[in-house]
Image 1 (tube, rainbow, N blue to C red):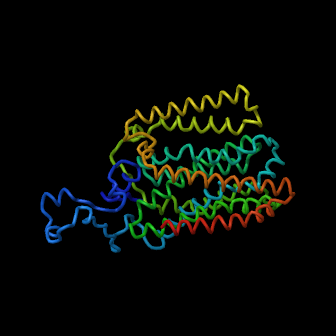
Image 2: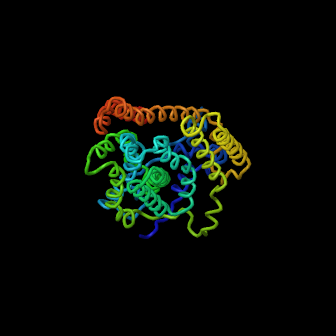
Image 3: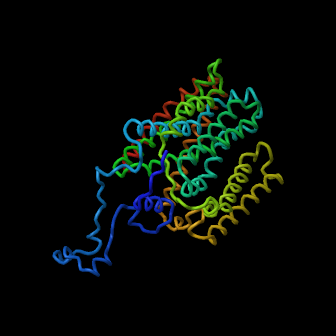
Length: 402
């Protein structure tokens, strides 16, 4: 597959998305030239007295005839998009698919004190490496980084399906979350690189199904767990079947593009904030271990709990100091976002909504199975009213926001 070139417009789009430019106009799709107007004396502005520079802001036109920035079209491109969107489907399901299979796993492996890690480990692998994957995608060929993430996700699913004990299952879930987070970011990256401005909204809207599919995980997982011939292990093996079906598209159809042609491997590696990302992973791991082990494995006032909380706090302070004093162009976290009150409010609202929905999705099925003695499939079905409301209002919110 030949590599396509990067246009100036597309590079500006990526620079804006990764925080490499401070131009607010470019992020809004606007062109503003007040200095040029004053210097050369824009004739139109002279003929229309009272018009300020802000009145002359013109929206960029989106030409429907613009050639798509890729070398495949038609049915091949449709199949390629379907292939990468299938990985979003799998990633969404895997976040919640263990909600209904947890009792079956505990019945086979025991170790009920490790139950929270079936969900926490996947989200830990995703959340702690999101910023790292974003920087890696900006430095290397997005196609092959995406393929690497798919491979990691599938290996994690294999480990989960073949796990002989709870520890192996947790390791597989962590690896799946690590690859799944990079896989999801890769889909967004490729859709932004290989689509025209007119194509992008309609294709990107398909990502909205992520919020609809994620709550269906308990229902699908419960269906496998309640089937004696399939068992809960097929809740993970199904990823291998779907991933294998679309693997040829990943290798032979996806366009390939290097955002930094001619730059050596080590020069690309130097741009990645490895220290900052290591500190982030340390903060997540130590903090979640302290919260998850408290009251179950260790007493809240035990030396182990106090030590884990202290380690998490020290690493968080070190991370803040490192980010403030590191090179603004290469730092992991966009510190200037903290000055934007609107973004902070959106983060808090999104975090609160996500937490409330995921807690419900994970623990209501446990109540149905352990307290009301429902089987896995029935527990998932009884969760459908909540899932239906969540899906409807998620889509409604997206429509209103658009």
